[in-house]
Image (tube, rainbow, N blue to C red; front, top):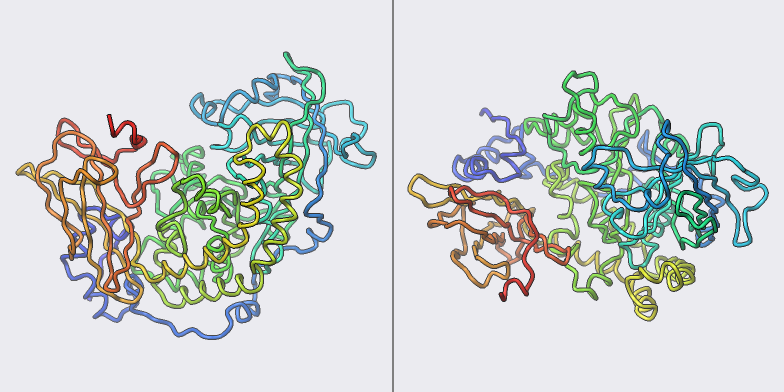
Length: 611
């Protein structure tokens, strides 16, 4: 039996053609009946028996990646070092001819819109303690600039408190074998230590690659135009090891290998931008909107892998065995699941491959969303809910969507989750670190200048700290719950028929136990789904016929329900004015011509609704 090549657009995104093709042409039956190895993993027709301790089994495999433990031997996780930064305007040649006020006045989005580099200043960096720079520490006695300084981060750059990238100049040495010093405020994190906590926990997990961190108290003396010329207290920062070629070398990895920061990447082909750097049509800026290049710019190995992942005639087992390390994948995902770091996968991670290796590895980055459930509940903030919990948080990525249709890979993840929960993320172990870090942070967060930007008062902070470790168990229960549910899926945009009515299609959901899935469909003119204009339940194919739709905004809710009664939202969501998500609802608009499109503006507030 012949099988056509199915792209992700047909298989996962839920275009009208793709959804109807799956539902109407007997594709599922064809896969089940064929018994071949061309695309069968899409419906889990190959169940691979798996037993034994996964960690012990994988530990023995040749080529297993390990971090360099010696890097962390001298770590004092609760110590605070003091940095003194004296900034001055430099010269136009290296782009440092700006004031400190200018550096702090603009977000990353301003520079993107203007198409210019971020403003920088020169500086003298000296390391010491609260009494001043210390002899023997970096920069002691320095009188000429040894660094350049600019803001860092993307979304966080909109905040009044900035993160800084301090770059040591050529010939000016290193600080702890690093020439780029990333100082982070973590303004979105009510704890102000979640990222550090995550990396310090990773250090103790053999299967994960971590990063060095350090609490830093920063003083800045501004000698640029308008500056005070006196040291000003900038409060507490966390220094996080910058991930670049130096990071690779320090951690015993190949500095000449492929190393990418995932800005937004779902493992689609992105044919317009995923090109070799030697291609005349290659656009590095467009490429880096998806993957920021931190290592070799030879993209041939990556592009070949992406093409394989999007070719469903190649079994996912072949791809994973050849190109990934199952231990790394399983433990990386398991760790994110248990700490509740929902904001990773399609972003906020690195992928690495040594120069002469076919294997790719995931390395964690930006764990600010971790350990946030208690705070979000207090704030009634809708993030990290619905499918952004457990295994399903990764299913929007084609790699994991294909992988987890195979029993072996679900079992590997389950073994990793249970191993971490028992041996590395036990509640008392996590709580010991949490309490120690909170003791440090309190001394800075509740005094000037940081107190102005604290998310909660000190009493509530203490209560929150006491509850953080218990989030591991909560996240574990979410993980178990998601295993019972059908999978999330994408909803299409209504397509206008010749008679003026509309058809709505969506992806097929999937159930790992093979249970039958039906769909409940609602369409309303309000985001609370009270003003319904269409409702149909127990739909068995991924398509419904609608009546006519006048110009305006509509809220479409499609929910998958398996035979056991477990319900799952679609991947689509609306953006709330609060900044959170309206899960399980796709927002579309119909224009004056009757054409539909996804509506990306923020959802109206309750006050707007009442008006």
